[in-house]
Amino acid sequence: MSIPAREAGQPLPILLLNGPNLNMLGVRQPQVYGSATLDDVVELVRTTAGEFGYPVEALQTNHEGEMLDALAAARGGISGIVINPAAWTHTSVALIDALVLPEVPIVEVHISNVHARESFRHHSYVSPLAAGVIAGFGIRGYEFAVRHLVTLVS
Image (cartoon, rainbow, N blue to C red):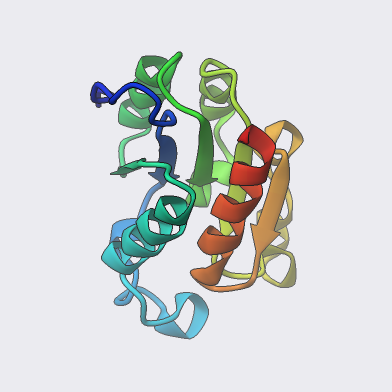
């Protein structure tokens, strides 16, 4: 993933990252994750960020190395990160090591309330790095995350 060139005066993009299985939103466990799709999430984030003049670069991947590469490539080219690390939230030390590379604010998002679910979901490796954590608001959590991120970087 490469961050495209921007016009003078335009803010650096917000990087929207979605981890494993989030490409299956709207199909996988709609009773937990709702009926919205990943396309709906990306559209919501782009619309919200656009209100403030921020472009968005979006990546969803089921391959951890691809996300790590994207974070390394983003260094110096983004304003901040909105991330739903999905299962990597609870398992990936490599993701944590890569999240510090861009040196920008991070807001962690979870569609479901992870604290009301299985106990293994209660621990997040990402949360200690995040400027905020939003969980349990469905895809509206992404909107809240963008709004918070914009206040941090403006």
